[in-house]
Length: 543
Ligand SMILES: Cc1cc2nc3c(=O)[nH]c(=O)nc-3n(C[C@H](O)[C@H](O)[C@H](O)COP(=O)(O)O)c2cc1C
Image (tube, rainbow, N blue to C red; front, top):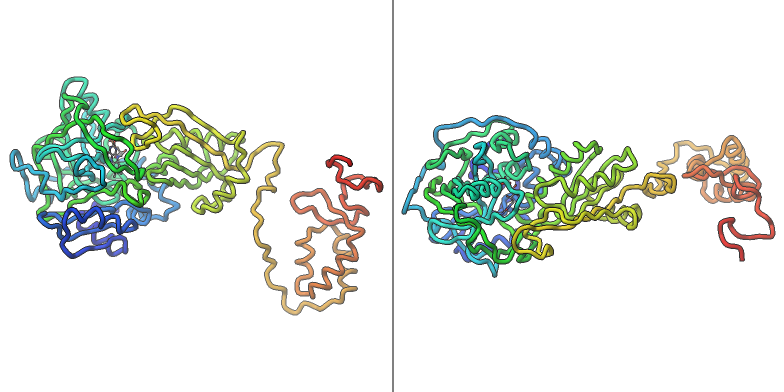
């Protein structure tokens, strides 16, 4: 997917049937309900009362949108994103970009130009929340971007929700805090899905994120310099804010609460940093994008974009660990539950896979991981449940890892501030490997399909079938399916009655899984003939 303007992105989503366009003017206080009404689509409101920007939301909230961005099927998303996040293509610097249409500095900076509104009942204020914060590592200068929500404070000031200890912007900000400095930032508001997937992709801390963006585009990302600092911003940015996170003061300002991705209010009232904006640049009459997070359908919000990225982390890490991984599916809101389909080769593959899945991502998820064999469709909940019910034995297939990194939005951590620690659960739903288990017992019992009888089958009488069947089984032991297939096209009562005549002389071989019929004189062909006086199976207690 090439680098795209937000306008072209909106048009593409609409053409693909993934966006609802609302032409009538809406008030800001109507926006929350409008987003809630279309959980399966992006929403684009052309005109917002008292606001110069149109409004876009929920534009990276589901797999149809991710598949469109990555040009692949749902099943391929994890592997494709893993492949792209490993690639590096150097960016190209351009001299100007459409976001320089309007440049406002100093007192002209005014965040109330954006459509500000109360999103969830108990939010502490309006949140500007599709903010891609660009910062640099103060030691190396390497630039990074990540999405962070910001609570409005005043016309040139907001907070940043920067409590997650593994995120790079926080790591950069912490370094500046320790040397008493502020953190210069440029902040892109909104962006096409492909940009978001590239941005959330987990990469090593010393990675230049613009090279990863190029990999997702398959071409150099065009970048333009900020007005007031040395940070680069993607040239397709619609709106850019420039300023500083006041890290010299530290995490001392009230922020939140906020309706969270959990669909609940995890996180409470936090201590966070203040951000002062000194410049804003934007496309005239441009598009303001807002991220959906909580609400009635928490699993269908823009937070869901963490799921393909987590699938990518898990795919890549399992591969690195030598696990033959075929597919990964992350569910829940931000991927709290992860499923992997693997081909086991060594006895410990499944448990090792669980260890990797639970700990490989910097995103603090998944909290629960489940691993399945390659005959399970991990996109089919009913197949997942069957494997969970009958291939998983709680006493020896459960893995619990205490005290891993968790996420602040999870109210069950019992904490509103870092450190967020969580225990993690792994369930091995693969077929056990070892002497106690027969692989065949775990095969799916599928409906028999013998096909159609051959044309011009010569009709046989019951006598003829019985005689022929005797020869057929004498040649070699036969499974019932072989027998019934052999006489396909003959009247079935003849076949069953002919078989019934032979039955007293037939026993069953111990050749699982078919247990074929053979002439043996007694029923369990490989066992000694039963003692006529004792009528119970050898392993049942005698009366
Ligand atoms: C819609 C959306 C909102 C997010 N909001 C926040 C946030 O407020 N604070 C935060 O720490 N992470 C947030 N995240 C997660 C980070 O953006 C994500 O982990 C990213 O990889 C961090 O990037 P970085 O480590 O390069 O800074 C959000 C993700 C999404 C998709």
